[in-house]
Length: 346
Length: 134
Image (spheres, chains in turn blue, brown):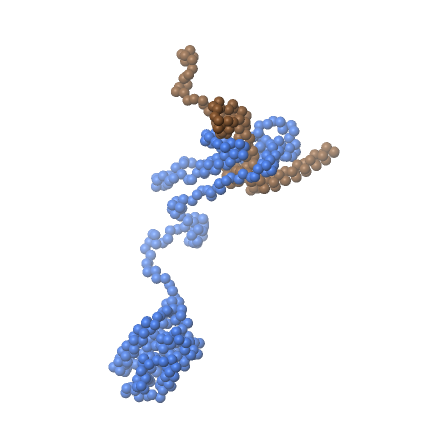
């Protein structure tokens, strides 16, 4: 196992992070902390390094001998007796050779350790390692980015049952073949629907206002801009009630001509806000209520809920809308006059 | 029979003491952290899921280091104090762990860490001229 591995390209990779330096430094600080209550205030580096090395070797030897004792007894996992035997072995005393009893507690070393624990437990407070050990190996962000995540980490299901989940994931298709591009606009079906409904409502409003205007024109004394709170509603109701009676206007039965369009508009609106429309059908036309949303009319405006969700218009905008509608209404009327055939198509 | 019974009782006592000791290990946290000890034990093939055994090893190592350090301290204190007499510095001796003390302490454990006292140019430096000629 070479330290520096070579990839198949021939490039040298950095050797895998060895834990030797980290553990050695940690052990060094632990050993120094152990020596402090003994009486030492200062340490020279070489003896401290040597002592650390010895402590590490002690642990390693203990583990090795304990494992061998466990294996001798046909076990793979060590238990306390293996450790005690290893301790006895390491101490190199042969005083116990004959006196070794059937219990591990007879061992001298273990007794010494027990006494040591008692002394340090009773005497001083526990001297834990002052520095907390950081988690090792410390992840190198740069290297981590280069490591390909496995299927499990990415959350993909590998194509094909023969591929296990722990293998690195396949690259995205756009990296190796041409995939269609589209402008990410962010799907917002609800927003789109609201927008569509709003536009439809605008068209209907235009139609309705046009029709109203025609009705009002016939009366003559009513002006478009004359809107007061109480009277408007009455006017509209009267206008609507007068509708079926008015037949001849400008030489063309405009109302009759507009009737299918009106029906169609009503149907469309019905399908959208059934409950509300049924309640407020007789009460308020949409356009006016929109203009005066801050004042509470009898009953709520038709599509106020959707308006509150989607729109946030100021008064100035409403004024502009009004002018817009007027202009549009006039334009439509002009067109209708010119092409009486196309009326039914509205 | 009697002897057997006695040894049986003693065994029970020993077992109880052992379990008690192992339980007490959980209260006393050794200075060497568990993770570090576990890492080194795993390196040598020691496999055990029980934390108490790892703590036992940690405590054993701690005792070993403490013993060596205390022996070295004895050697350090045993050395005659420096001759220079200062009014401020009378008996205050800076207790520093030096290689000398450590090597003396470790010799009792069978470890030889003697440092060379000087570095010579060649193996025969400082020897008598007679032997050098040979």
